[in-house]
Length: 305
Image 1 (cartoon, rainbow, N blue to C red):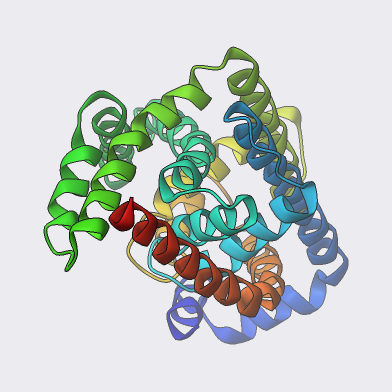
Image 2 (cartoon, helix red, strand yellow):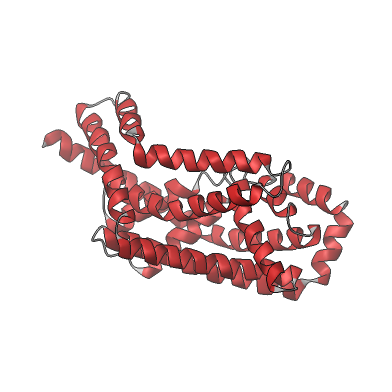
């Protein structure tokens, strides 16, 4: 929170200016927050589609909880790092599946919110040099990381390394087995033409709606909207900065293309949705605990089997 206030202070040139902006635009903030909530709810349907690709039936209500809980936890953890494990734990508990399937569903959804923005950022960065260089490096890193995940046995090796720390043979075998199954499950989702097309269409639609939430503050022409949308996708990449919720990186990305007033107001609208999502924090913790018990039982089955 303190870091966010510092960032807002630097952007606006003083807290009085920030307060004046908020007091002058309450309706616009409500509209933008509503649009963000709608597009985030739309994004949650990708979990249902990814699960179906693995022949799992995930309720839409469960998908909503998974998405918004991970959003809330994401904004309070460095670079949204708490988002993915929260998704995996909640999905695993809801579907009663092993970590390989749960993580595969979560990764398949994350693929679109990381690779698509990274590609857009890499292209846009060419026109914003030298200021966009940090974002270009992050974007290339994101694309390279996905190339390793999908094209190299990196996950398998990581699983083997983690399994060495296990105290029992059963747990060691369980970790190695699950890590070997992760990539095939991810490929199974992403190689499904129906699932891939549906998740891509939903992602693009949600980005457009989220772009409208930015446009609420910038207003103008179709060109302005296109600029807002590119800035928004670049902020996804900037959010990889290792600060809570990517604070600093998100704002820097937006400032490359958007007016500073719009950056402050939109970011505040987004964080309001994220803060509201934290009401699911306790539910997420319960899911973590419940899923850890399930995994313990599964590992014991491997040990005794």
